[in-house]
Image (cartoon, rainbow, N blue to C red; front, side):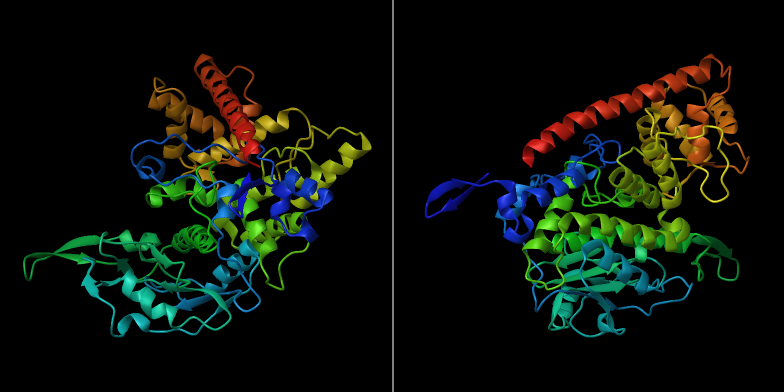
Length: 492
């Protein structure tokens, strides 16, 4: 890399970008180990096919070098707090009410390492100066996003790094009929609509009113079980990505990453919400915090990265099934960093990992007969099979469309069809029944791995063909990922 100094191009090294106190060879080596793009947790992006962000976008990729040269916004001693401003009444299970913002507050503090505070409810959208339209959803209306931003910027507290207005009302702008978010990095303000991220919003029923001979649309008043979990998962994905834009990070195009662009909920649900920052984007975040004048900035960058993963895992575990796939990813990542082994299923607890690591350290192989555990039935395997198992977990995650950690019949059949289009639906259903060991109508990670890694003695020709193709698919993904890793290491 080269920087311009007095009209001359001067080469510099990566470690020279970090402050002197954090650029020692020891610290840089520790950080480099954390930022290794190890597969299968860091997968290359899917091909640019129609109806995806990669296909539609003309945005130029932003490398770490580009990021530093663009001089992004940095937290400072006087401006370092993220503020959440509820524009809709929070709490409650009724449709149109905000989820508990303390959950999102906890996410942002763990994700970015910056303090986050919640302001009092502000009925700003009902005031003057904001254009309003009908959105065709009963009597609901939608508000102009840019007008809302102009109102938000004057509400930014003195110590605020940015202010995020959160609403369950619909938004639009001059070019789109609706938007989920709109931000202004210059004004340090953003507005986010959770309206269309709520599954209950789409649950419209119709009935015939014979008194007036007219079809009447009816909209739900209460959320169903599971709706709030989906809303929270989507809100986590949206906020973590958009606040990254305030820090100057553009959409990621190097890996499946939280900072990837999305053409809609169908795309973000399928991959981005299940992973964390890729090594390129995590390097950007560490450099931003290390270079800032914020008094709470980490002194030990590598230690902060690992502690960040731990805090996010603790946060995800408190939410139960809402972030199930993301929990799998975090447990895999910590297993890589803590014990230098590939996790078998990314779902074992820290205590299980410690037990396996102790056996490996003592030279005692894990007991293969220990298969049943009350709380964490999936072991971490330090042997050669562990890498393949982890790759299969990521394959499971890619086809788990709703991110609940369980594969339904439709999702399982789509996986089989993606591997072999000639495979009949009836045969796929039989394989699903074989995989669903507890007969609860869905396949979890443990059942999926047990079916693939410990198949029946005579699985039959059809199932054998599928198993071989699944193994070939994971090997192909691994080889492609390794080539991407080599290219990206050159960028570092």
